[in-house]
Length: 89
Image (cartoon, rainbow, N blue to C red; front, side, top):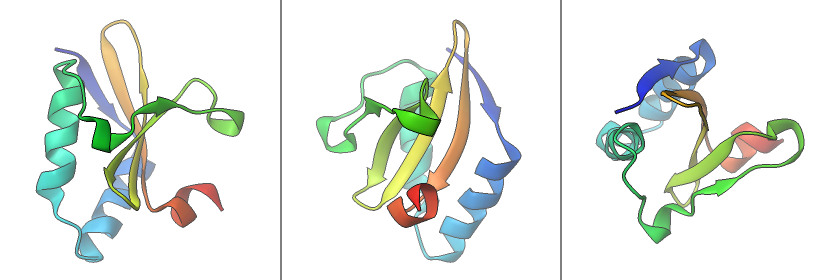
């Protein structure tokens, strides 16, 4: 199991998504799989990012709910979460 790290920005954005009515159980399921290094289902569309997020990965919790994270040797840092417009505009 990887050691989790959560950025302050991630924690703040997660609360924002919950206030928007998003189900926190959905992101917890994705976090659990990532922490235990289990493969995500194809619907999560897990992939590397480029540009200002070079070195990070992104997956979809829902079609317009994203999770950006970074993986190290024995850790995983959850960087950001939100909609496409929250994260890329």
